[in-house]
Length: 388
Ligand SMILES: Cc1ncc(COP(=O)(O)O)c(C=O)c1O
Image 1 (cartoon, rainbow, N blue to C red):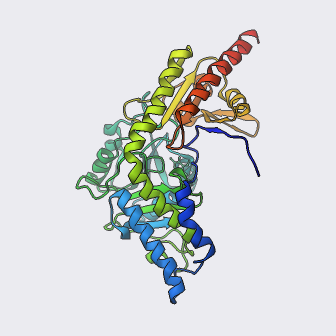
Image 2 (cartoon, rainbow, N blue to C red; image 1 turned 45 degrees about the vertical axis):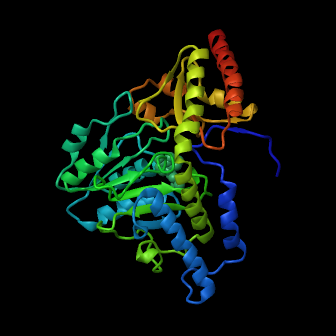
Image 3 (cartoon, protein in one colour; image 1 turned 90 degrees about the vertical axis):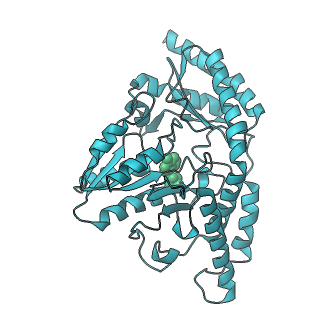
């Protein structure tokens, strides 16, 4: 299947698989297809590859290889962390999370609430930041787990995770962070003396690895009950034959992410900043959503007055430009983003917002092309709205 060249500015949705990742995976899809649990040496080749990957992931996160559990995706990692915490003590059945989490947390917590688990939802201010005093006050003797994301997928806003983890630790609850958008984009060091993170979720496809592989970091001192029960894979912490090729790719992707971290913070940040500044200069009544200081280097969420972002997406699509809307179209109706609504923005602002997210595979030419097309689309739609 051939496709038109695209300008892909939606790297928080998923990323291009790095060709070097594919190259490293290929032998495990073709030649070395053994089961890592098999006792013979053909299986051992796969097992050794798994362990090498575990070391590479641990290196990126600054933790020990034995603290890494391979899963199928970020969603599974998030579900596993919360389920485990709830399973440890029947007298601790209270969860604290935030109103701006990804649906991999919110929908799970909503489902748990329907089954009688009490959930406290923390709000955010206009910058997308939490009130840490409110968080501290919310933690109770029966709190099983506090789960807050590291980086917001829509706005890129970063929560002060080490500070949050320290508060939760002081109050003797378990702390989980959904770091799916943070890993590979900002430095993370779980071994640091200040780290009180019990669980951390990662997803391969957000860092130039294929879809269908994730990681749950489980601190070696944290009790963990497996989510998937069956064989003894992953040292009994996650049953199911491992997705060897993707795990090998994940290890390589983490190695590359570590090597590219500086680049992410200079080149990718530069692309984002250039794009954002020039959008704000050339398009009237456009504003950035959320804290611009504590933010991922690759993300910008911009609200445009008087337009529907879904319409912009359709016109950008015609120009082969991919980005995301601050709303989701499901079964014929448009739902404004829960993140932007939680930040106190109006439905109109949420519905007029677009997210652009960059990666090391973007170029200045991508930015120039997008900057050429976007102002025309916004002007055209505003004109149409004015006439209507
Ligand atoms: C913050 C966040 N958490 C979790 C997920 C889910 O990850 P996965 O697609 O690997 O299940 C995503 C995916 O967009 C995300 O952005």
